[in-house]
Length: 209
Ligand code: PRP
Ligand code: URA
Image 1: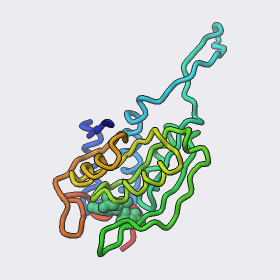
Image 2 (image 1 turned 135 degrees about the vertical axis):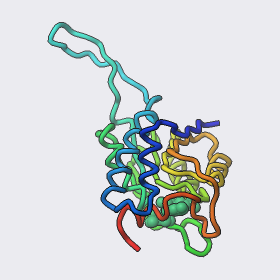
Image 3 (image 1 turned 90 degrees about the horizontal axis):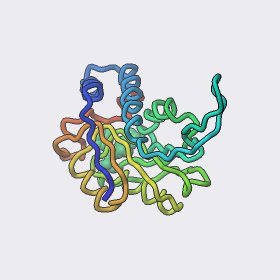
Image 4 (image 1 turned 60 degrees about the vertical axis):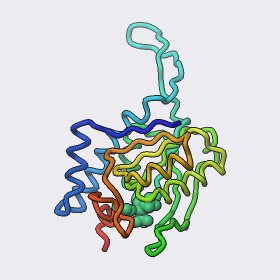
């Protein structure tokens, strides 16, 4: 079974609490999203493989550990997942970025696909799917289905807030995927929104509605 990590770091908890507040404006919400995902990326990339590289220090030759940037793909689920890309790229600037467009049908709450463009070599990369909200889990499961159809095996899912229902669905459908959440909330309401949550993540990021 993949890892399930709920972050308890005080900086992450504080920033997520600010994001939950209805009074937090779009500009601050965007900045906080970037800060939180950057902090989460630090931990979520802990298992990335290193390669040994020979370099010259001012003193001597040395064999040192370095990341192989060619190894990583970040895949935001549009549109809210886009708000996470810059924070991740600030730590892994050579990563490739794929995009999966999904929206939830307002009546059925099921994901509807409208776009999918992934790096050709996604099957060889460590994949980080990013989306602020894991509610019913339908969008995450569909996104991971696409990526597995392209051959990817090493998949991580990073979200800001998860509902227990979403975690359960994702773990049942894709038990091999590591899940990283900044907060695990209480339940879903009758509109499949996370309670207490932060509202509609896309609207909060882009100032729509
Ligand atoms: C939100 C969110 C997730 C999805 C989560 O996107 O960003 O993608 O809902 O819900 P689920 O776990 O029940 O599938 P939304 O469909 O609102 O689209 P948007 O990002 O374009 O606003
Ligand atoms: N999508 C959101 O943006 N927020 C929720 O609470 C659930 C799904």
